[in-house]
Length: 139
Length: 139
Length: 139
Length: 139
Image (cartoon, rainbow over all chains, first blue to last red; front, top):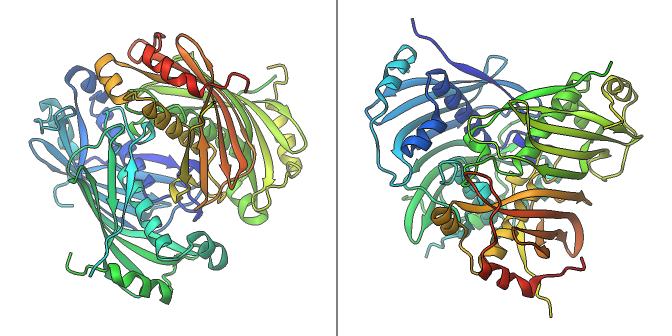
């Protein structure tokens, strides 16, 4: 059976703007927190990777839809569903919800690169194995 | 002849992350600065709109491509090309360049809404007129 | 006996900069999260206050000391100790720690104001009562 | 005669919060931009320093006063006055003004360190020379 990973995110003043709603770019931060926690849950230490290999994950492409605004103090959940697995990249579907209702949705292609040269690198084999129970290729 | 609007953006420490490159979500901030300056150049005062009508612009959809990383101290240019004009929304193509080379590209649909209710509103007529000399519907 | 309030804070890419450490201004965000959670724990809804009275908390003064850098993935704790209680303001001492070791320390005076006029307002009486078990005036 | 360095800063949505004013921590970003531009104006390339020596500037201490709120679209000026020069650190006084009126004021001690070890380093001699015409030790 497929497992799903999600984290809670509280909306603080820092996340909002003068429209009294969450500033649009901050949903990308919320999604990146969920991806980082997901990668950590898979047993991968991004800081250690960065120091020992100079490699890390970068967003290559993204497509997003802003469905409803979130506001100060809202408690949101952010999931992280791998929907595609390639030799050098993941594609994730991520949804931000409030009380079960969709607020924001994003599909992003995350590439594994050498951060100095920008060159694509093969994903670590143990990471590929660890991600498989979460993969939902039909989404 | 079509006019093109762009602004310079300097990369500061606040824009970078531990990968020593610009944090991905910050390109959306750079693009929003260019859209805000563009709207101001059209003679529209967003703060005045917000106070007097409770209306403002929100990002409804976006699609982006991260081509090359930008780094600390880089001087970038960010343009803002309206490519579609509807009764309640604009679509903008925006490109972030460094020394003429493409770094980041984004297409976003910006809706005009009542910020309390979230309901779509017709764009102010004078704004629609002012944007026409910049419109490039073939992009 | 005095109670102490603290929250955990995880360091994500968004919090770091090209120096590969937490960007200095982000410690203020961490501290604001702890103050917001503390105020919520006291039973006060800041968003409700803002909407119904137009009043909110603003930082009036602050003094900070950066002791050691925090880095990507670090798990920090941030406390929030009220050390002074006035008619229109609180003073908080806040410490960011990693594995019990001090990383950052800040003393801030938080004023309660009408956000439109900026005028100081008396703190809600129930809030003053609720904060008393946490007060450590000797710090 | 003493020279003074300042930069203009425009307030965008990203800088504001749900209180409809500039989020307090963002004044630190504005001040860091002015310090970075000042250091660049002195002929020092921070990114080059970071890459070639692993050294950079970190905020060691700061003290700030929030005088009046700034709002969306405001055009501010931020200055950067070195008021103390030590072997391993600068102290800067920085003021954010709107139409000549003081909005925010900060005094910060900026140390030059090895970013890996955190150890204090002597400031580059050419930088010490370049900063002298701007020094106002009586402030």
